Structure formats: structure tokens, C-alpha cells
Amino acid sequence: MKSMLLNRFYPIVRLLCLFIFLSAISSCKQGKQKATEAINVEVDAFDAADEIIKRIVVPEFPDQIFNITDFGAVMDGQTDNSKAFKDAIENCHNAGGGKVLVPAGKFLTGPIHLKSNVNLHLEEGATVVFTTDKSAYLPLVHTSYEGVQLMNYSPLIYAYRQKNIAVTGKGTFNGQADNENWWPWCGNSKYGHKENTPEQKDAHNLPRLRIMNEKGTPVSERIFGEGHELRPTFLEPFECENVLIQGVTFTNAPFWVIHPIKSNNVTVDGVTVSSHGPNNDGCNPEYAKNVHITNCTFDTGDDCIAIKSGRNDDGRRENIPSENIVVENCIMKDGHGGVVMGSEISAGVRNVFVRNCKMDSPELERAIRIKTNTLRGGFVENIFVKNIQVGQVKEAVLRINTYYGIYANQEGDFIPTIKNIHLSDIQVANGGKYGILIKGREESPVKNVTLTNVHIKGAETPLSVENSEPILFTNSTINGKAY
Image (tube, rainbow, N blue to C red):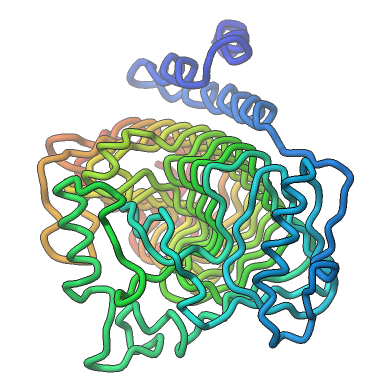
């Protein structure tokens, strides 16, 4: 059976698009035959992951160097170097591309806007520090907040509709967000918010943006920024193609850290995110396609990696699923989840591959997480997780929740669908409160969850499963018991 299946499907992987391939391999029969085919599906699926990586275009740049000090940059950590960064990038772009070099030293700047064919490169020992003067992040730009597009403060590093861009090197980007700057706007006293001061939940902030989302207000009319309290992302390639983020460290982020939105061919390689502020997700591909996240370390205040595709009406209008995403050789420390799909997921997520990662921290809540509700809707399908070492998680190794919602009134008319979730070769030393925690919908049960060679120890409750097809276990145990 194994040989026949491999012979049948391997040419399809090479010749057809991934979606067709995965649709074919996920249509397996019930019972023992289904359990057997699940193993073969994983073998073929990770061949497909290799194909995704091969197809991703990693940008290359002309051998030209534009040192920011040649454009007036001063490495004293106090002088505003915004013009030096802008002029170096402009000159590099106009010359056909190359490397904008940030040498060792401490450079203060406002937001950095990248242009096509520019590689912003930080030498070892270089630190770029972003100003706390919020007026520097004006004029407003087309960006996004929690899955809803708007005109807001510029991200700290921003590229809009650019091609062949990179941020590389061994230096550090420090967003200078803390309990005095940006973070208090989240509304939590833990992050410096003081009673009776503005916060993101005030009527002129998120509630106003939510209404604009529902009404379909043009993005150009969704004006926020000054006088509002919605924090910018750190690094945001928006509608970009061929993006490389490599080697650098991000710390003290205002909000989401790496946010490739509506972008294609994105490589995040060897990056360290060490940022424990509110909503400090490490990497959030959104409406993104062909993404490779590898050799990274995430130590975050929220999800390490969270794959998204728009919130509610915005996501359904865009109708751009995030797809063909490979995560490998990464370390996940603190965070709400290791690899997460949702909750802004209204356009759907499919074809996600996670392999050869280590997840371990008393503050890591889940290893793999899928979260949505009937306001978000959306779909999640074809998720493959293989060869993961989990030391400790707080809540669950796998959590699927279709009733997700921190805030009230999270019920609507958009029933989510979740299917084809495959975990294999996973060792868990301490599974937390649950081994597997699934809460599907009676109208749309979770389908085709398989565990192969998965061994979970130390779970207080092995299984809590509602509204799901029976999980298919092959050579798997929870607390030493075979299932």
C-alpha cells in the first residue's frame, strides 16, 4: 500500500500545484486504511514543503554599498538620523539597488521606509533605536490593526508595494516600546496603563474601526493615528514580493513584530524576537503566500508565530487565504502559542508545514493552536506538524477552539471549518492541563485529526474533545496510555 501510494502521488507533487495535491491526498477512507494512509500523507506532504521552499524567490542585490554615515548619520544614540536613512535608501534604490549599511554603533531614527532592491544591513554591534516621538510616525500610511486595514501611524520598518527587499545582518532593532511608550495604550496596568487615560478599547479607537469594517468604509477614510491609540507594527512588508528578513534581532516592539501582509515569497531566517510587550506576536503572515520561517528564536509576549487572514468582513472581502507556509528549525520559548492559526482568519489558512522545532517554557501556553469563532469564520486545512520536541506547555499540546473570544459578542453566522490536521513524531515531556483540547461546532465538527508517533507525558487531562471526528491515533500515547 505504501509503495503504491508513493508511486501514485510523488509525480503529482512535482507537476501540480500544492492545493490540488493536498486535496487529493486528504480524501482517504475510514478505519484502518485511513490511519495507514495518514502516515503516507505526511511523507508526501513534507516533500511538498520542500517544493514550496524551492519555489520561494530569495532576493539578491547588486554589489553596491551605501553607508548611512556617508549620508550624515551619527552613532551617538541621540541624534535623529531619519534623513540619513531616507537619503541612503533613496540613493541605493535610484542606483539600481544594493546594501544600505548600518555600521556598529547606536543610531536613533524615526520610521524606516524600504524601497525595491534595497537590503538594509546591520553590522554586528549595530543598534537601530526608534524614537519615542509619536509625531515622527506621521504622515499616516496604509497598514492594518488586528486584521483590519486602516490609515494609521507608520510601522517602524515599512515597505509598501515594493519588490526585492531585505533586512539583514547581526545587529538589533530596538523599538523602545515600554510601560512609558506605546504599551500603555493596550489598556492593561501591567504595561503601564493608568486609569482614566486613553486606551485602544475607547469608542474612538477599536469600536470605531470595527464599525468601519462592518460597513465596508474605504480604507482611505479609516483615519486614525494622532488623537487615537492604536499601536504600529514593527516590521511590515505590505503587498511586497521577494522579501528576506535574516539574522537580526527585534526587541521592545509596540505591537506585532514581523507582519508580512498581502506579500508573496517571504523568507524569515535566523531572526531573534525577544519582546514581551502586549500583542508582541513574533511573526504574523497575513494574506501571505509562500512563506519560509526557519532557524529563528521566538521569546514573546504573545503568539510566537500566528498565521492570519483578516478579521471578519475585511477578511471576507479580501478573500486571500494565507497558504504554503513552512516553519522549521525554530525555537519557541515564552508565548501564548508556538505555531498558531487565527484568530483573525476570515479568509482561511491552508497548507502549513511545521517540522524540526523545539518548544519549551513554563510560560508557553500551547504548542499548536487553531482559534476562530462564528464572527471570524474562515477555514483551516492541511496542517502538517512533524518532529517537534516539546519540553513544557501550560495548557495543551494541540488546542483547536472554534469558540475563541476574549471580548463579548463573538457569535455570528459564519461557521468555521477545520480539517486535515496531522501531527507526527512529537515528544512532549510535560503536556500541561490537557494533552489534546478540541472544541468544534456541532454544525461543523473538526475533521481528520491524526496523531502518529506522538507521545505526551504529564498531561493532567489526556483528552478533551467536543464536536470532532474521532482522532486517529497510530503508535501514540498520552501519559503512557495507548490510544
